[in-house]
Image (tube, rainbow, N blue to C red; front, side, top):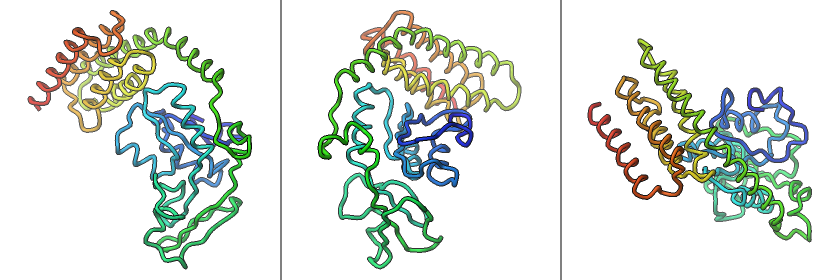
Length: 305
């Protein structure tokens, strides 16, 4: 589904777990398609969005497009599984207004109906008990449709067994997932070094490029996002911290001059040092020294802007 959701196999789609930043179709576009397209296999499927960029703008955009949950990286297998159980056991009812279709965006229920109904007159509220046809109220209309649908996902899942009680977490399944993450962590150093090599190559290409360099910095920003999201998951929290710093200083509107490239190189050197020395946790004295080096470089570059 990453390249084209319309041509991907979506038969039997019950739950969607997607990353935010993907190419060419990102998680926001995927969410929009699932919620609004006539070809969508299930407009009511819960959508859990994962991202290392859990900034408020991204979280709000995902929510307003109809994402059910937003989970920031790094995370453990247990964290993901608990969120899936929450979606199954405590589903949020769907709301349709002239401007929105998706799960109720309130995290706390003040009344029996959702946020869109707070200022809505009772005569404008319609309760719908079928998912067969979803048509939003006309533009400009004050109507609100509140869908009250059976919890089919819970009926199919193990969490739905036992008279509707909340699902229990299978210890063996969690242990298997955590073991898989541990095995993947063994390959993380090679994976991260490959990304750092790509960053170094982009730096060389940028310096040889005359004129606009935005395409290169967009690629640098995407690689920084990946490093930011994966580091802590695989035991290298400093990679997540340095990746976040690089992500923030190469975002939209950033400087694209040679000094900005030097900042990218400084981040590459710092992350390579973390991987080479196998620095876990906060890195102690070495970690603090690397952090200060990067902060000083970023602040110096910002002051010169």
